[in-house]
Amino acid sequence: MAKTRLMSMNEANCLFCKIVSRDITTEFVAETANTLAFWDIAPLAKVHLLIIPKQHHRDVAELAKNAPAILSEVLKTATDLADTFTSGSFKLQFNTGADAGQTVFHAHAHIISDSVKDGS
Ligand code: 5GP
Ligand code: ZN
Image 1 (cartoon, helix red, strand yellow):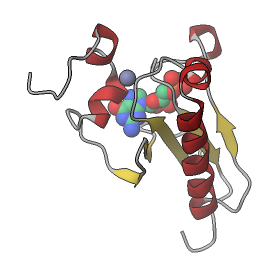
Image 2 (cartoon, rainbow, N blue to C red; image 1 turned 60 degrees about the horizontal axis):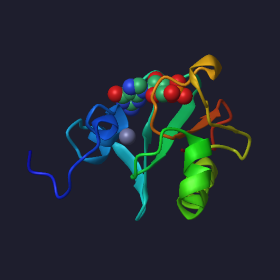
Image 3 (tube, rainbow, N blue to C red; image 1 turned 30 degrees about the vertical axis):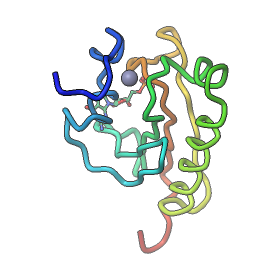
Image 4 (tube, rainbow, N blue to C red; image 1 turned 120 degrees about the vertical axis):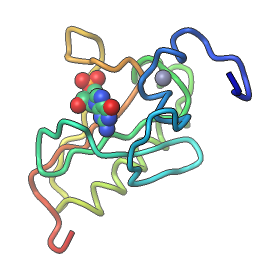
């Protein structure tokens, strides 16, 4: 495996790590030094984006504890995209834990909105 560093088993099996490494192809809508954003494959609204840290953290609680500056970057990317694609009314959601509906255990923010920005 031609990776620059060894991956943990979590990362090796993680869908969003495979998107970060481009092993799974997805159309990106934004990229910053530490974040990526792309359209949710099963949108719940007219605008449904996912914003992820490039680093693997299992959920937002772990991200906040271990890398708060990167969480801040996730929030900045998310709100910038909400500004681009919505009228300013949107939900910003982090499902955390299986009982709360988390299905991909790599921290991610959802931007969800039916209030689409005029002209986008
Ligand atoms: P969670 O339920 O963990 O908060 O959110 C995971 C999200 O990832 C779901 O909304 C689901 O539709 C989305 N998702 C799952 N697999 C893929 C994929 O391969 N590509 C994209 N773009 N989204 C995915
Ligand atoms: Zn991951």
